[in-house]
Image 1 (spheres, rainbow, N blue to C red):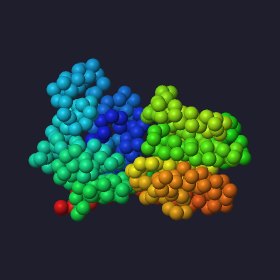
Image 2: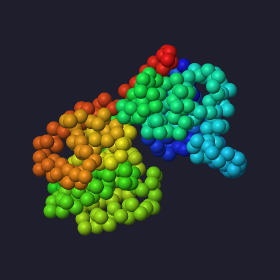
Image 3: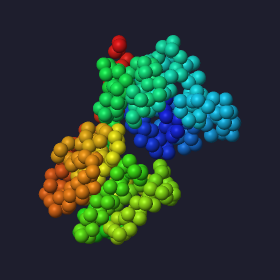
Image 4: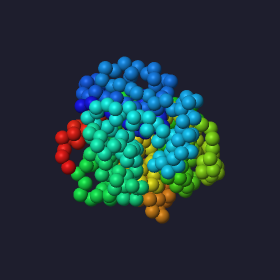
Amino acid sequence: MKIAILTSGILPVPATKGGAVENLTDFYLAYNDKYQLHDITVYSVDDEEAMHHPALQSAVNHYSFVDVRSFGAKIRKNFKHLLKRDEYYHYTIEYYFEQALKHITERDYDMVVIENRPGYGLKFPTKYKAKIVYHIHNDFLNAQTRFAQEIYNRADGIITVSDYIKERVLTIYDLDKKCRVVHNGIDLSAFSHQHQHQRTELGLSEDDFVLLFSGRINQEKGILQLIEAMNLLADEPNIKLMVIGSSFYGNTDFEDEFLHELKQKAAPLTNRIIFTGFIPYQHVPDYLACSNVAVIPSVWDDPFPTTVLEAQAMGLPVIATRRGGIPEEVTPETAILLDTDQHLVTNLAHTILDLYHHPEKRKAMSQAALLHSKYFNKERYAQDFFAALESIKTQVI
């Protein structure tokens, strides 16, 4: 097939600036390059590093960069904002999309894959012959979504990252036949037992029982409840917590009000809770390697957090919550799932204490996690993704 990939309009592909969706796009593009499956053109915002990336040498993956950074582009974006204030997305994203759309509709594609921006479907000409496919990573299409029915009707196929997100789409039409679930994958070679053990560099001893929280630090991730649970474990000096991440995406030292509140809550245990700040993604496995248990206590419906997959790939037992797509990522042998009710804090403390006192249980969970993680490799993800596209191509709805 001749396929156009319409990226989200914020971060570039190749994923030189990171981004979960962008990294997943790189995974299936690398698979396509290896097996020469389709002729693919990727539409991305421009970025100097991305425009000189080795991936651009591919014979089957082509990259079209939309100028969003030049002085002229900034003037045109602001002018557009003044003329059209009722856009579906932020005017900077809409500007990128409209520039890409001009290029796409002038070419004869068999399929257009829209990455995590289902609202883009509204602007495609109704007579455009290519099949329109949404690849949805977040809860962006449900019965409460603005223009939900129109957006849903415009799609020929919908790929979601979890059954949870699919169920949300089905609130629009419960007899849906458009949706397919393709679970995300990670680069297992980047998350393995081969990573450096660096406890001493972090002020940790071999006797410490180290919990790891990794992710953006906000209320939805449940980090406040985890720190409250640590305060309940004040009589267990060997239980330590590493908090990896920052208030915002990327390398920033900015401390928002919520992070300031967290550090105040953690103050009584200042020698037992370590805030590392932002850690570059390639170094995260080193921190996982010196941890005993990963805790992902999300208090919102997390669609399919890769932190769960990464922890299991490193052989860590997981304590998480029964929210969103998390239950799809684990088994009863690899994780302990908790309800996000009024007992969450005390249940977190009891579960942590139970694993602390039962190393044999942790060992069994670790072995199960390593085995289970094999399914979530990036090659399986890419293979399933292209299989879903093929089924959409042939399906008549």
